[in-house]
Amino acid sequence: MRKFISILLAGLLALTLAAAGAAAPQQAPAGQPAAAVQQNLPDQAATMRARVCDRLAQRIQARISEGYPELFKGKLTADEMNRILEQLQQYAQEQLQNELAAEQGDAAVKDQVKAELQVQLRDTVREQIRSQIKERTMEQIKSRIAEKKQFRTQLAQGEYQFKNKGEIRANGRPVKFDVPPVIKDGRTLVPVRALTEALGAEVTWDQGTNSVTVTLGDTVIMLVIGDNVIYVNGEPVALDTQSANVNGRTVLPLRAIVEHLDGQITYDPVTNDIDVTLPTDGTTTQ
Figure 1: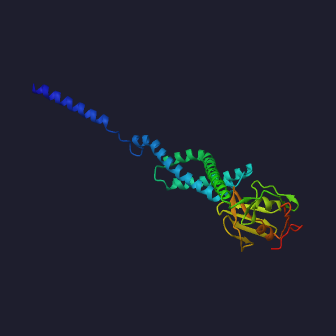
Figure 2: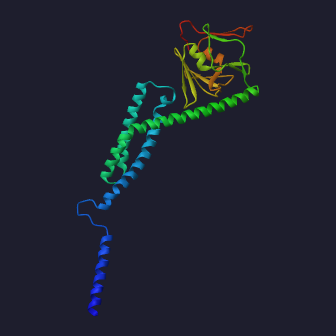
Figure 3: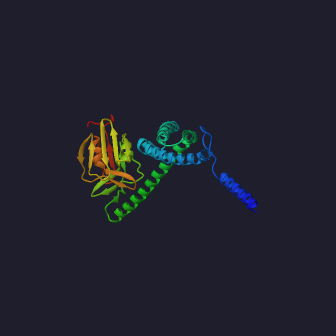
């Protein structure tokens, strides 16, 4: 009986040791990656890729916003867009290298992440451009809706009146306004771009500073919407009626624009027509 019990106990001990050995992880040979580590590589790569992608997207977004304002000012030619894409892709490649260098992890994991993200860089850049243009466009739409509501309120309160009679001519030609001139405090305010471009000037708009710059010959006029001061060749000039935004257009007292461009204004009280003329050689003497 004792012999039988001893044999039984020995068998149970052997089974227990075998089960424990099967459950324990196998040690990899020295100098080779462990099987458990090999199985973790895909998870490590996915985690690192997510971190790098997030930081890379933020850097590209900031670069687009700060370095390429022309993307938000109007349509670009195919060559201009391709130039921007190439520059941003090169920037993204440099930032990818920097981000991976800052990562702690296995070299094989970094190589895998680099190979995967390099393929996606161009699409990432394009998506960031599309996303920011869409965001800016939505902001502009909301801003214009708010401006129109405000202007309707101002009209209802009598702060502004439309100039419904007569036309404005620039050097003999009628000026076409998509937003009509308005009258405030007895002053005729006209959309700056429409009038000055009809007079041959160049007009630029800076959304960041909310300012307009008019250039004609040697004269440069700069104004910030809502200010009662304009700058003529850098010198401040006070306005008796401040500039404003009417239905999405910057308006300014007609006389303030014309006189600083060395022009003349003729008003016909019968027809309410206004004629604006500049020197025939197109130069100014400011």
